[in-house]
Image (cartoon, rainbow, N blue to C red; front, side, top):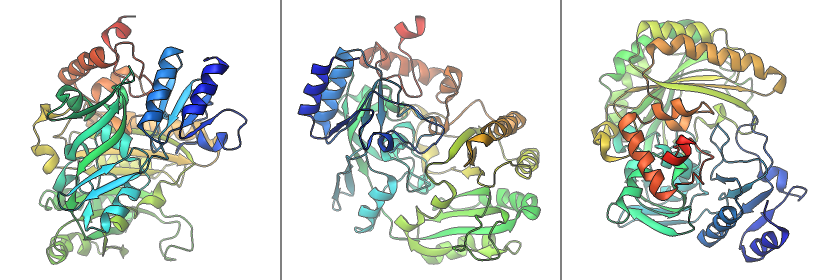
Length: 465
């Protein structure tokens, strides 16, 4: 641990706050989205800007402190919080600077996608990234950035123009296509392995009103509905990023009486294009069944980004498993449904994302560190429960579900959906060639593995130890 004099010096220099155990806001500051994460940093630095970040990095390096970095705090693995070390909390860095003429935005790392797109909506613009509004801009972008515009405009990192990043030696660098190009390649998919990004510059897109929502079918009709969805999406336009969700509606008066506490499959997404064309393109999906409910409607894009938030509330216990599907066969559908009807928690959601083909798959595979652009389907089960006594049964069910589905999964995974699953799974997020290139970058920019509380890419020296 750093000595008291060094801690006081840091506290006096920070524009933000430095919290310690026992401080009034300490317990709230160490919370993340996932209630399973219960770690206690010795210090929490709530940074106000890049200079604060540099001071914290220097202190942690000089005193050999474990360091964690929190942006939005949404990642299920809970890597944002450490035990006994220093947590750099970026959540108060929420600056936004929109350039509507150039269609760009500078965004600080404490923003969520909902906050960023609320500002952009005023200009009729939107940033790619995020299926829910509460996900942080920083973590999602550095690992990929799937979201409701991925088929039309690509991943969040595909729209990244530059970053300002604090490296392990306390330097503030700019990385772009023309400056520190190797580092720019690495941060587009390599997560927080190379430093702490203090500013993102994105290309943004004209997106005003979209056609968004779901058609709802009862779980008893789910097999036929998913088979229909599989056929429909083969011809769905790139303006429509879509997917299938298996979930149970909350027993809540805010939902229509006929949907409360009903287990369903929902088919839908966001159509970002002319509304008349969207109505025509989505008509077969909305007519099929017919559904028990059709909740598609025109809405501003920033409202569409919030429409699924109720399924993933903050502060509950979460355990996730994920992988890209090699296809969406009847066999895979049968396993998904067999497990879902036996789900132990009514809050759990199973997701089949349809992310391609589209803008993401047209970018050359080696252009960024992000792996696996050409799998059209991504499977994710998010087990969610409220009683810690139910943890064992929910975790066991999730693991059994994923193991049963493995014959239909590629040796490929989206790094942002990974829990704490070990080095082999991190490797699967990139593939051999990209992983080796990332290791070489780690050797250059972080040879001591200072930034290791992440989905870690170990430098050669650390891997050999």
